[in-house]
Image 1 (cartoon, rainbow, N blue to C red):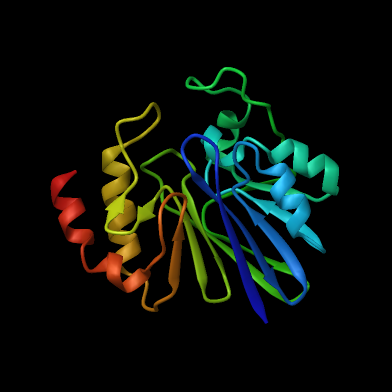
Image 2 (tube, rainbow, N blue to C red; image 1 turned 60 degrees about the horizontal axis):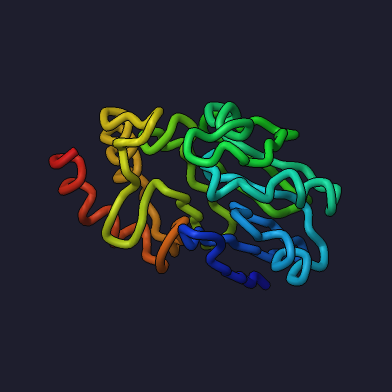
Length: 198
């Protein structure tokens, strides 16, 4: 049985997720002030997973990692963002145990966790798939995509990522870093609009 808890965190209402599958809790994108909520809502935490390195998604990484004694997984190309933020100079630095390279899959005692690399919003931007859920961070939102005008953003990379996203041949519920859920198929249907207008 799989259950999902969602709590928007901090000034940007960044979604922090706790997905529980086969009795294992996965903490996804613990943002500003996430620690008390996470600690209250986990029973068997096994990993912290980052979709990307922006401060509002990673703020509580290190605090939770130390309190729960569990590993942190972060896309390799965004690790540099975990130690400093141009927007938030007081970002608490965090140090991943696993630097995820490209598309990678991990097996947590029978629970498969798949990272897909979709750069554009930032260099390491990725989605994370567990069971029938895709956590899209700031790559894909409901009827929108991540901004490409930030430091280290790249519109050309975003176009390539959207082309790659269009080729996924199955559907899952998509849980973005901000706002409500959508599906892979719904967002694939309007991907060409974003590709054309980037």
